[in-house]
Image 1 (cartoon, helix red, strand yellow):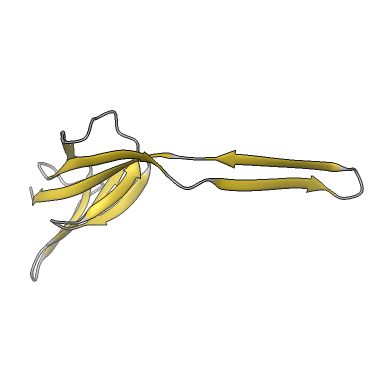
Image 2 (cartoon, rainbow, N blue to C red):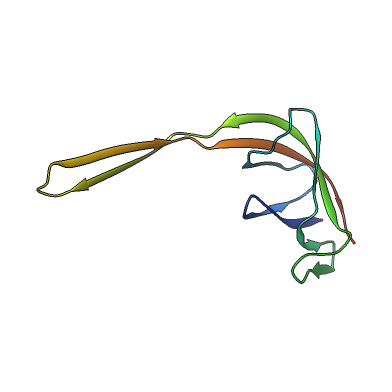
Length: 104
């Protein structure tokens, strides 16, 4: 069984036991988290698609850790103008272990 959830403006395919990295949630390690925006649930031979979400469906998980992603460097320049600029960014992320999928 797997589900498609939406969090942080992105969609993720999850199954029980999966560990996913999502945008930062304001929770500490060990806390429970519940995702109510379930877009699709698929089982053995049947599946359910929401319009846009499935009512009474949820995915539960446990926060494993809070961490920062890799540094991403961006370089801007304008030719013949001696303009160069380097910008760096690190995204705050949350690692979540999926425990259970409850279909509506």
